[in-house]
View 1 (cartoon, rainbow, N blue to C red):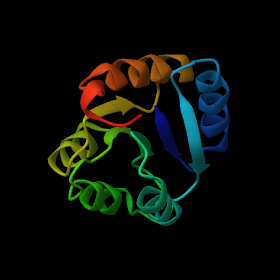
View 2 (cartoon, helix red, strand yellow):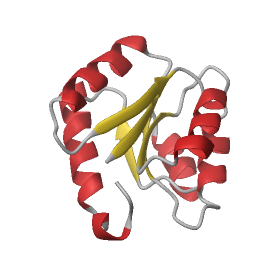
View 3 (tube, rainbow, N blue to C red):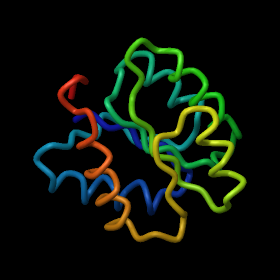
View 4 (tube, helix red, strand yellow):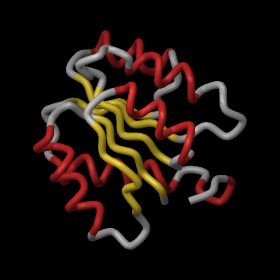
Length: 125
């Protein structure tokens, strides 16, 4: 499963990359700090799953969700954020899962693995 990580929190990006390398089903295609870079990578690499920090410095997380929701086969998306209002907005524009920012990297990896199990046969990994 090809995964794109998008977060301005470098500690979180590195922790998730390290933990996901241990999972044989996971291939982190890139880990970037802003939505603009994410959009380029989504268009070029078409990852199966995007882990997207709602609080990117360029404030374009909503734009990423809107863009990928228009694909014929959109990637699954886990949004990481802080509030229920962010969760509602993220879900309204296409997020599959919303995870609180206070979760540990291990808990986020568990959510990634669980999310990847949903409809995997119909998607390219």
